[in-house]
Length: 270
Image (cartoon, rainbow, N blue to C red; front, top):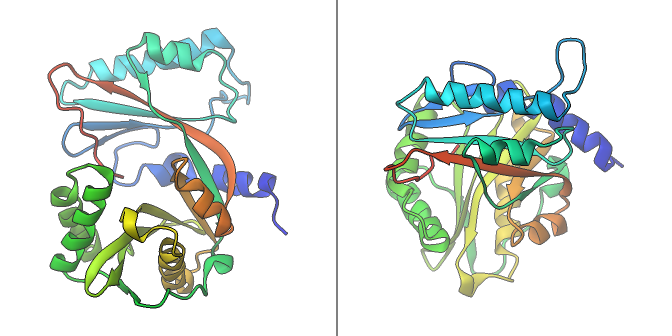
């Protein structure tokens, strides 16, 4: 039985820094298309392993603020924080630098093998969305549930990544040909992890085990790629579903957003 401490250690060792910064110019400060910046870190310790005090944390945040000022092309920057890090005064330092805390999310980790094998409820078909039309139908359903307008950007990005050989997949659950639930799975190169993202189910189809079956189908699809662990940053609404599926909350992550005055503030999905 793998306990929470072991799951958190695997998360820290494999999913922080380089794994989060695919496609960017560095392992800590990243710039994506559309003027989106992203800041993360594997550890706040210095080269000698010493963790910073409050003054040290303020200095680190000041360096991030200086980086933002040096890049006028940035419209929005996210700093990703974790609750289990030793970072005294981080919240106050980020707010003073103009970063606003967003809703905290639970970091969920669990065994991929343990999530496989769940059957779809009667009348529900599970399938990978493999055409642009199928992807758009799934993405638009997610937009409807989340109140967003990301399908027009997400689908071309998925197609581009798949054409480049990346193993990201979008799956959908259909009832009488209608998409009623959807979500992505994204194996992380160089790790034993795959992330499950964007999971959404129409309100009238919730509580039937559809999302759990969809998660199982996604996981089953990537087991052959050597995936051992599944992770997700989940809202409070989706956390109980993932816990019933066998994932464990190992920490919390809180994004802090800086938005340039006059920009629309809409973030790029990663």
